[in-house]
Structures are given as structure tokens and as C-alpha cells.
Image 1 (tube, rainbow, N blue to C red):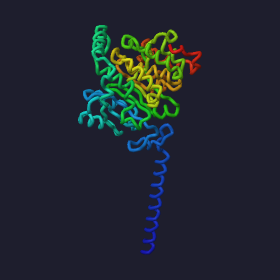
Image 2 (cartoon, one colour):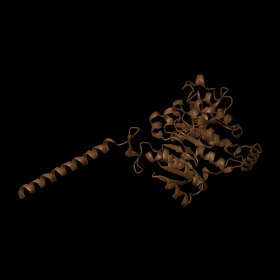
Image 3 (cartoon, rainbow, N blue to C red):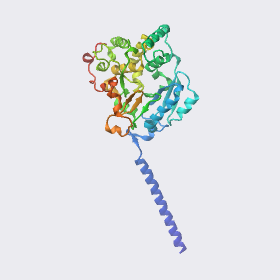
Image 4 (cartoon, one colour):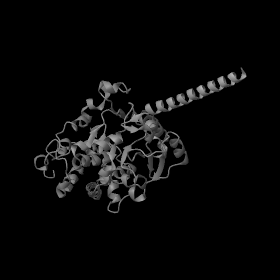
Length: 375
């Protein structure tokens, strides 16, 4: 009897061991089968310590005094997108970041965060600028009621964003960037990787809102651009871009520009020889300081002419708000992941009519039929 009891116990133990092993294997298989894939990429590649499918980062130009607004923006982008994708942040400032700023922003994300100081030569007056005359110009613009008329730092910011941000050493190994600013809001879940989408579709510049610029801030910008294009007509890849930039065949600029406080772009555009020559030409003209040329029209004119039409993309599915303008998706499917009011979207207003006019442009045509001979 005792021998039978021992054998019975052994058999029960063996059965329990087999059952537990099968359960363990089942759990392993179930975990593998339910492994989340994002855009066809294993989700494990988006962990903070892994190399993502695209070399990309959020690029943030921000002051120490804007800490709370920056944290609000980070909370938005983390909740809506980056908790799944963990793309790194690159913070830039013309002065060193405080330890408190670094500690509080680092705590907002699991992703890697780096902090850099802008080189002095990228945030100062170049040698060819007459600073006395620049001061007189600022006073004249102030009398006209121009926004930021007296601000020198605003002009340094626009020049930096136009020609230098992509040269910073912290972006040396980055191919795509997403510009984030303090106090912006993201009102829709973003369940795909815009960087990977751009990479797969050959897109080099993405926007959510396009507006008309204040003409009094850029009185000579278009004439300067036309002179540059006249010297380099071979740089224009999208002749129909003139139809978006001008209402009179290229004679004057209608002010259409992609609102650059939101940008997702390929740094290959700005690092290209064509763009570098374009920026250097504008920089030598002095309009960043004698007028108030913004990085938005500077970027937009380049994107409209130096890129093919299909290389510029309207991210109409991304809910985005920067006071006072909102991009809210209009389709019913997007409404399921958004909390914004589509009736308040910028596309309903004339001032933002450029937004949907870009996708309606004809595709690339020959320069002979679509350009205006440098106009």
C-alpha cells in the first residue's frame, strides 16, 4: 500500500509539472502573438533604450522662464504621442539652461533629453549689419504698430530658426525634427509615427496650419527671393509653387506661409546646397534685422519652390493649437480620437486659407509652363 501511495504521489507531481510547463509556454506564445506592432515595426523598437526606425527628435527653442509652458506642451505631446514612441528631446537656448529647468523637463518623459547652448555667432549680429540703422528700422516699425517691432531677440530667433538650428552639434546625428513650443496643445491621439510616415513616402516638410503673413514685416523679402531665383532658376523643382505663393503670376508675394511653430521636417532640406545658398543670400540682404523677416515665410518659400509638391504634406489629422489658431480634423473617424471643435478649425477662415490651397495645387510641371522666369 505504501509503495502504491509513493508511486501515486510521483505521478501527480509529474502531471503538475507538465501542466505548469504547458501553461508557461502558452503564456509565452500568447505574449509573442499579442506583441503590438506600430506601422509594421515591432513596438519594442520604440523603447527609450532602443534605436528607433528613424533618426528623429523633438527640437525645442525655449527660455528658462518658459518652464511651465514647456511642461504643459510636453505633457500634451507625451500623452497624445510620445509615451508610445519615446522620441528624444533636444532643448536649445541662447544661455545655459538652469538645473531646475533640466530637472523638471527631464521628469516629464521616459525619452532621452539633451540640452544645448546656441553658439554666439548664431545668435548675434553678423559683421555686415549696421546696428545703428537696424535700431532706426525697429523704431520706424514700432510707429507702424508692427508686432515685435522693437524686439532684437525675436529677430535673432527668426534668423537662428531660418539658417542655424539644423547645424547645432546636438542634431548632428538627427535626420528628422519635430518643432515643439511652450503652451501648444495637441487635441488628438497620434497612433502612428509621423517621422516614419515621412521617411516611407519621401516627404520632407509637414505642416498643420498655413497663414497669410503680415506684409509690413517683410516688405523686401519677395524681391530678394526673386533676385536669388533669377540667379539660380535650376533650384526650382516645383514651378506650380508660385501659384501658392503669388496671386499675380509671381509679381508679388501673397504672404502664404506654413505656420512654423509646428513643423515636422527632414533636415536634408535645410542642409542641402540649394537651401544653404538661399539662406546665405537672404542673410546678406539684412532683412532679418532691417525688417522682421520670420523663419516661417523663409522656410515656406523654400519648401514651395525647392521641393516637389508631394514632398510637402498637410498633417490634417493632427489636432494642434497655438494661440489663436487651431487645426482640428474634420473627418468623422478622426473625431473618435480628438476633443477639439472642428467648427473652430483654421481652415474655415480666410486668413488661413493657404492651409488647404497647398494640397489643391497641380503637381510638378515643367518650369517653362509653370514658372515666372524668376518672378
